[in-house]
Image (cartoon, rainbow, N blue to C red; front, side, top):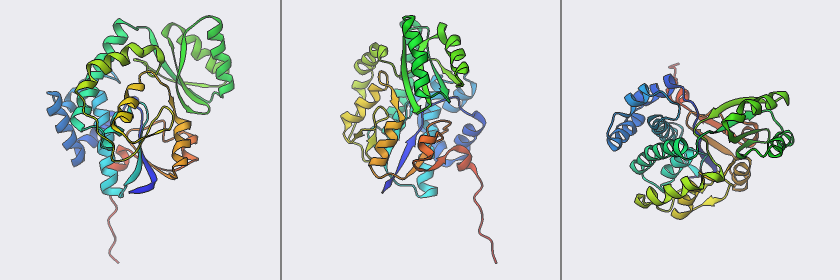
Amino acid sequence: MESDSAIVFPGMGPQDFPAVGKFLLIDPGARELVEQASDTLGYPLFERWRDSAGDYAEEAQVAFLVACLALARWAGDRLGADPGHCVGASFGGKAAAVHAGALDFPAAVRLTAQLARYEHRYFTEEHPGIVTHSFARLPQEVLKEILAELEAERQWYELSCQVDHDFAMVSLRAERLEWFQGRIRAAGGLPLYTMDPPMHASVFRPLRDRVEAELFPSLRFTDPVIPVVADQDGSVRTTADGVRTMLLDGFVRSVRWPEVVDGLLGLGVRDLYVAGPDRLFGRVPVTTRSFRVTAVDPRLALRPRQRATIP
């Protein structure tokens, strides 16, 4: 096991269906996981994902989980990757729990599908009208000034994710989104993607409590074989309860990626394998300046292997 390397499972965003779908159909390990997931869910995962409409539909979330784990397996088989630490950023926490040996794959598939249903119902019926917006090229000092304007108007918001020193995600009411995007542009920043359902805010405590009471009792967590680095603060989780708590806290605690980077550097990590369709965590400067990054994505996995030439 490589103590100076770590595997990162990225957060979920809109997927490139042609690339990810092709990988799930062609790669033998991915096909195996798709079949296992379909058996667990009771419906054909690939076909349901292909026909789904939303970026965060239940089947899209399960497909993302499967793709990440299949790519991690591919990295082990083809690249010889054997990382000594494991990280799951945001949604990637479930994949990290499986890869680290703290939760079995069928349980993670069921949990992913159930959480998608719980979140849809919760944000539709009990906490509607909140989104999480991501943006880049906005220094923290400038962001604080914009957020102070929301506070002055007694408008609710929470910082849901600090991706880099000038890249963040803020949860706020949808009715203030257009104003917020305008202020970001006026300050020289770049508004990016709006996530609905939202994520990582303390006001979602009722959802966390419900999930813990109704879904988690049926899950059997075990101590991870590979230490898991929590995305909330960079702390190392080596027990079943530590991983369990990390997943639950994902509902109410923000992701602090620069702290994760610091934590990994403190552990002596120098190489990162980012396993999954990633547009974010493996690409930002705080990551690329700190580690040698291998993007283990569908395009790499599907790239034809070079044949040795005969002299």
